[in-house]
Image 1 (cartoon, rainbow, N blue to C red):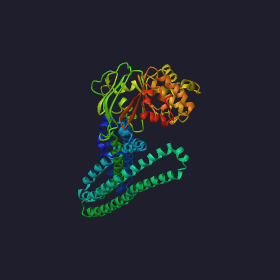
Image 2: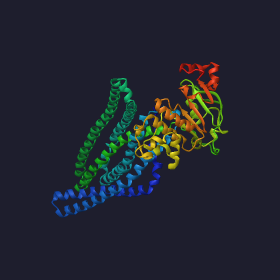
Image 3: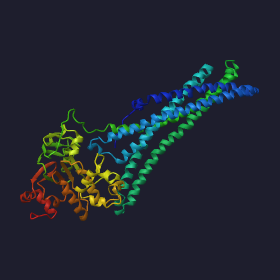
Image 4: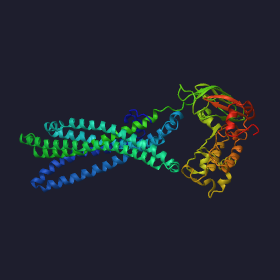
Length: 579
């Protein structure tokens, strides 16, 4: 779970700079909108006594002027809202875009610790809430605050003793609103955390429903889900209870304030400090304060909830990212595929090394198999070759170049990965093979042929334009794995990393994939993580890893004859020397 640092909305101000002209035009409309309020209060002061006196000419003139002012004000309000909405939405969009870009650069050690459901909630619901707060701050909170200042200024001009008495209640209201806001923010953070937990459980549940059903574990899963939604309900209820309490308390204070003003106003008229027209204008102005105060109160609560969301978004920025390329990176050029590891040590935690002093040389075009128990460091070795992580001691070289001195993008174009579980994005088959890289139709077809995938692709109703559904549900495991191989060999990488690419397939699918792998491996340096040792007996080198070190190395016959750990692993899988 990501920690939530404190982040202010002021940190988003630089994102508004490109929209200065639009904001300035919206600001002019806002000033016109706000300036109409004291004018309307003055007209109310003229209108009310005229109605009492039956002066129809004055009533008609005041109503006509009021209609004109209302028309101007509403036109300005429309201009304000439409001009300011764009920049606010752009800020939300840019915030979400930059955070997603940041997410793609996080160190894999940090990324693997994060919940997919939690991250999804942050980049959708939390980002939307921050965008709404920005929009309301620009479009509603700012004009409400200005209206408050302008109308109060007009009230002071009308009768400062009466205005002073009115203002005595303001600190009490502000104190209550601030106190409620802090409590609402804390409750909102707890509520949002609970929603993230619920989203994480939902993601796991949806992906694992067949497994749950196979083990008849529906009651267990339902119980877990019921617990999470009950915790979410309780957290959300605490937030709503605070909001429900705030509204009547602040509303009562507002009503008490208005009644007090009426009493003091009657005293000021009796003392001849204010006439009836002035008092009518004052009361109209006072009524004009109710709406902005209500808006500011509501928006302050939403600001606190948005603050909690912004904190959760900014937490992503606090996570460590991949180290950048060096200032003057070396050019890799055409890759022969020679790999060299010298005294390489690495640990995700410094006190717990995963690899310890690994030495390895792979000649161009060799097939090297990595075997050993889970946690021995095989996948970590792959992550170093792709520079997902950087060796803390020793060097990793490709064709004599230290990986730390290369551009990461150029390196990853030369070293391709075929994962154990093939993952493809929804889209067309051609898009899945190209995977965001510029490639012609001929290059995509050539990659598919190398991966032994062209046959089933061309048999599809729309061929390479056929759609892949989310998670590839309309394709078999073997077909998806061959698409993953085609994706890997597109661009002709010099090194191929295979993470037991056939372990999850049935015999028929495995045969098709093995044919694709054989064609894809030709002429390349290949490293393969192998759990089924029957698939790697033809390897030029077999490395046995245990606890981060290479304990045995050699080919199949040499290691079987040595009678060590490799032979023990083979015999467990009923593989003998004659094989």
